[in-house]
Image 1 (cartoon, rainbow, N blue to C red):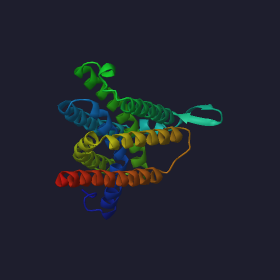
Image 2: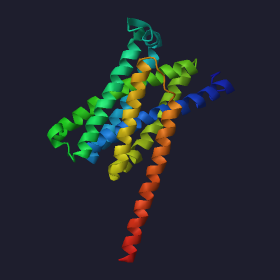
Image 3: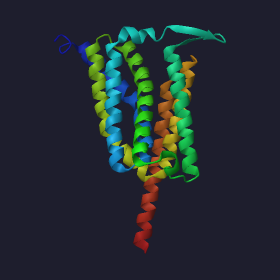
Image 4: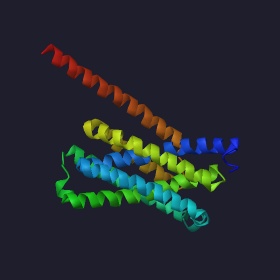
Amino acid sequence: MHLLTSPEAWAALLTLTSLEIVLGIDNVIFLSVIVSRIPEQQAHRARQIGLALALVFRIILLSVLVWLIGLTVPVFSFAGYDFSWRDLILIGGGLFLIAKATHEIHGEVEADDGEADEGSAGNAFFWVIVQIVIIDIVFSLDSIITAIGMAQDIEIMIAAVVIACLVMYISSGPVSRFVAEHPTTKMLALAFLVLIGVALVADGFKFHIPRGYIYFAIAFSAAVEFFNVLAKRNRKKTSKQSV
């Protein structure tokens, strides 16, 4: 009960929730891109499952803080670098993001409809969920380790994670529909995923790229693309009126 009446606890909750929402942008972008290749009904289910798993993974990781902190202990050294399990997971996740985004960009450029690669609809749905699980684990690990450094009470951490996941759930639908309706925004989202993948790999090698730079680049590019979409829509309206 003391947390409910503590200004410090509310300030920590607000700060941590804001941070978790910002860190969740990566997850929402990946979800929006990955579900765009399956039918809308399956895409909706995949988003629900993906975000539910993101919430579950984050709460599980918070429940095993001692084990999680142990992941930051170096397990071996190579070329003057000490690598922990966290570093290896970030490097593996970053390489997966780069490979996946590059594959999707190739598919878009070559106008590949994905049928040959994905197989049946059931198969496609299964592989989408597998990829979502992989990225959920990577993003959850990064998110929770950040949360541990900012808050002391596990109740605050769990509350912040739940609120952030709810915001991600609410925003994922509109973002996914926007990406599906505007092919150029999908290419932009894929470029973001390459950028985020590079940042994860760099973190794994102890070269930290401030996330503020990455999110500023994403926000600026998204704003430019928004005005491009708006201008295109206005041109269509003008051409229809002139006809």
